[in-house]
Length: 210
Picture (cartoon, rainbow, N blue to C red):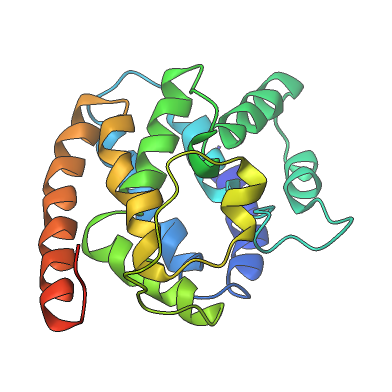
């Protein structure tokens, strides 16, 4: 099992090192640490969880090139069963928020990976990642005249270049209510409050009128 994890890690690390700081290798390391914290409180297959964490962003639509399927390419190279590969694919399908159109986790392993990834999207690190991604895409820091969308398709969510601060209202501040595990919910509560404090201060320092 350790050899398989190492093989997967070697393959994915090269990919994540080409991404911007919001989804780089450090993101994967943090999500893996989050998953281990949650695994300590849940009965789940840690091997499947770790492989899913390592692979969950290699084919992210934000970075994927046309015709490319790195997730399948790497997954098929691993010495694991078809059932394990299918389970990992299903977990990865449930990770993304997709503008509120995400898939509900169908297993405790999927719930852990989803929570672990979402914990890295909130709190201080979530704030840092949001502005790192916004900077990489040339987005405004804030636009207080912009109305956050409450309903949108996945395509609408991905295609409109809203300001980084608007992203808080369209995704980050919603995640606390979508955590699955007791430990995930507890950690999310503290990180959620930190984001609220940050936004309050940001509004004070700008011309915000929320």
